[in-house]
Length: 124
Image (tube, rainbow, N blue to C red; front, top):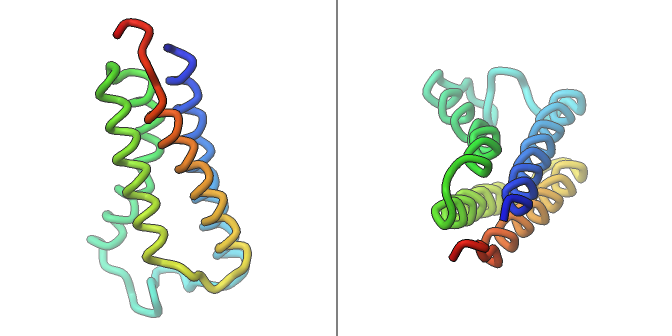
């Protein structure tokens, strides 16, 4: 069903924008020092890893629309579970806004998992 693909794609966009909003608010709130992670200067490898992690939702927008069913179901579920685990490890965050946005991201991830899990193709 093409509408599930569109819903998944939209949810990945919402998740990406939620993460981006958290990053922007952390900068404005002064909760981070640019160039540092946990008070230590970050290496290029760390920044590459951060870029790769933040690229996943962007790639998932395209993947949701192009990868054939049923592969896309499992790719969506696995990617979303990885984000949930990754964000659970970081809890709690300093700012209330950050914890709120992580909770919102859990809702988006839950919806991604739900739609992918309950997706039944009309052709199968």
